[in-house]
Length: 146
Image 1 (tube, rainbow, N blue to C red):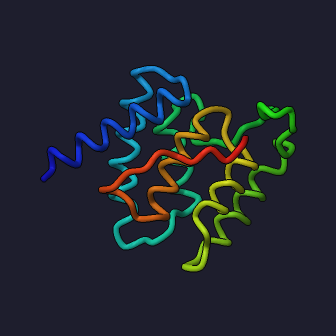
Image 2 (cartoon, helix red, strand yellow; image 1 turned 120 degrees about the horizontal axis):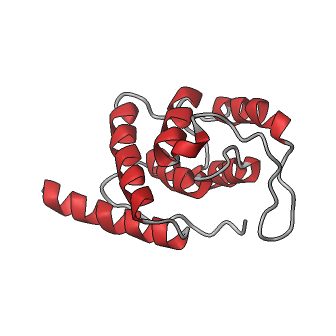
C-alpha cells in the first residue's frame, strides 16, 4: 500500500513542479513538505499560520518562513496587495477557516494575497490537499486564473 501512495505522490509532485516550472530540487522540497503536512494535519482539520509558515519555508527555503516584502504583479497584469498588508491579510484568511470553508475559494484568496516571494503555487497545492483531505488521492491544483 505505501508504495502505491508514494508513486501517486511522486507523480503529483512532478506534475505540480513541472507546471510551475521549478526543478528537481524543488520536487524533493515539496515532497518533504507533503510529509510534514501529513504529520501536522493529524488532529488538526485546518492549518495554522505557524503550519503555513513552516511549509512555505520547506517548499522554498528562500522564503525563510517569512512573508514577502516586495511588490507582486500577476501574469494578468494585476498587482497583488501591498507587502505591508500581507501579515494581517494572512491572519484574517487563516481565522476564516472552518468546516464550511470552500477549499477552492480559500485557496484563491491565498493566491490573491501571494504571501511569499516564491512557492505560492506549490504551497496552495499542498494546503488544498490538506483542506480537501485528499492525501491519498492527489489532484492537480486547479487553474485559478492568476
